[in-house]
Length: 159
Image 1 (cartoon, one colour):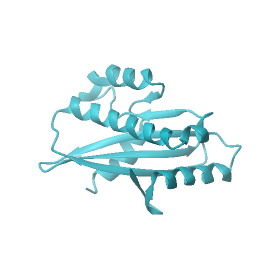
Image 2 (cartoon, one colour; image 1 turned 90 degrees about the vertical axis):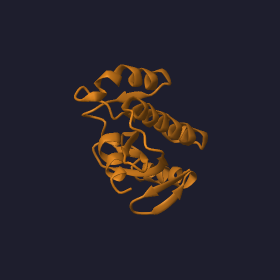
Image 3 (cartoon, rainbow, N blue to C red; image 1 turned 120 degrees about the vertical axis):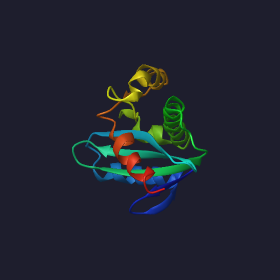
C-alpha cells in the first residue's frame, strides 16, 4: 500500500511508520493520537476513495499521509459509507501488521467516520459506530471527524 505525503511524496507503509516514529521522538513527552478517516467522491466515471492517516500531537500540530482507491461509480450512500468504514479499518489493520501497535500502544486510535446527525447519513451512525467500536477503536462522527470530513475530503476533489 502506497501513501502520499504532501511534503515527501510517495511513501510505502514502512516509510510512513518510520516517519511516525521519528515524529514521536521529536517530542516524546507529548500526547498523541492516531486518526484514520476515509471519504469518497462519486462521478459518472468512478468513485474515488481517500483514506487519511494522521499522527496528531495533541495541541501541537499533526502530520498526515493518504492513499487513494478508484472504483466503479457507487451511488448508494449506505454502501459507500460502509466501504469508507471498511477502508479505514483495513488501513489500520495493515499498519498494525507492519508494527504501528508498538509505536502507539499507549495512545488512542480514532476512526473518523463521514456520518453525522445532519443529513442523510444520520440513519447509519449506529451501524458504523457499532462496527468500529466492536473491533476496538474509538469512532468519531461529524462535526468532530476531521480525518474524514476535512483531510480525506480535501483529496477526493483532486481526482
